[in-house]
Structure formats: structure tokens, C-alpha cells
Image (cartoon, rainbow, N blue to C red; front, side, top):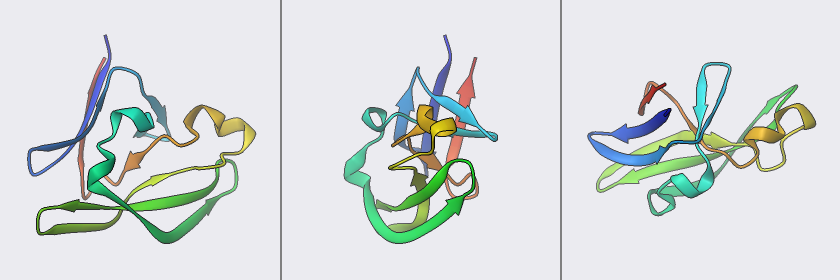
Length: 99
């Protein structure tokens, strides 16, 4: 069974057996993410086919990783499968999967 995990300094931020992979990024269902470690930011970006992404900062004790995670609150039709799913920047968060 496939399994995916996102960690920072050995601390699990997200873990699931059901996820989506889009453009090489693992998107975690919102229910699999430890929301208590995330703070919404004002940062946004736009993807022509996925829509407008919103961002989270990850807060771990005294470590703050600004805009390290993103999600599409209103994904376009071709990306509805990842709407509200959370992805993480690989240079800030260790994301692993096994299939």
C-alpha cells in the first residue's frame, strides 16, 4: 500500500496512505496534516491550470519555515483532485513516499 510522510527535523507534519502526486509533488489530504503546526499567510501564487495557491508557514518550536506549504482552496477543473490538499517545498520539508 502506498504511504507518504512529510517531516521537519524528525517531526511528522503529515502522513497518509492516500495522496495525489502532481508535477512531482505529493499533495496530502487536509485531514492527514497536523494543522496545529501551520499558520496561513498572505502569500499567493498562480498556476494557469491549477489556479491560485495559498500558503502556510510551518511553526516548530522556535523554527519558522515561511511559506513552506501550499494548497489550492479553489482549484480549477483539471486540478479538483488536489483541492485543499497540502504540498510542501522539498528544500524545507523532507517528503517521502513508498509505493
